[in-house]
Image (cartoon, rainbow, N blue to C red):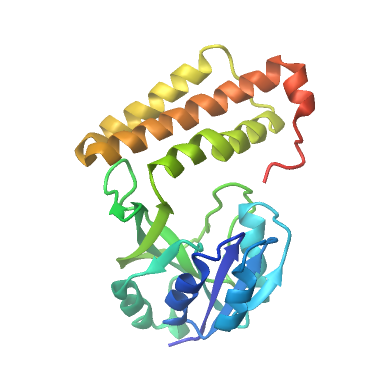
Length: 262
């Protein structure tokens, strides 16, 4: 099997980095951590594990995730978020690949998204296929500064999962949706020239809830299904409400630092 470089981007991931690197080390013989200024023990723990740490102020999701692959010593790169882990099935599937003679430029894994220790199988959260293994000479992360992906031309889906410990609990689910997620989205939309009207927050919020709860079967997921649908609605409502506020309130707009979206 061809050698693989494992890459992770981090910011204050001391609680996650060792488990993530241990997961990568099962299939990778080079580990790179791209850190954007952690104030906890992330860097110390990564270096103690044997990873090479690159210090890079945060550039946005896509540009930040391109730094590690550009410094990789191997052609094939396995990129995980710090809160992601390979399952035994994923390890076996990757080790079985003939990457020296691969007809594909990338491989996707199904992602199990968790709240706490609970795997959420509805609301569009599973199967959540994500390209994580790719040939850096043929493709790589897009330049999108939010939710970047790998635009491969000939990817293959592997019959295996990785685990994503998305939120520690319901408080974090709602806190992120109502806080930095919606703040960031509103600022990005404003800078791109997108504008909202008085109906936009309620319409987008209602649409997000109906999509998650009904069409993506959140109703079959019990409390977690309802919570995911509600958090999506809160996020959609607030990002358009905050966009409208930026449009209408000069005091709020002038106090905002649009250079610090990330």
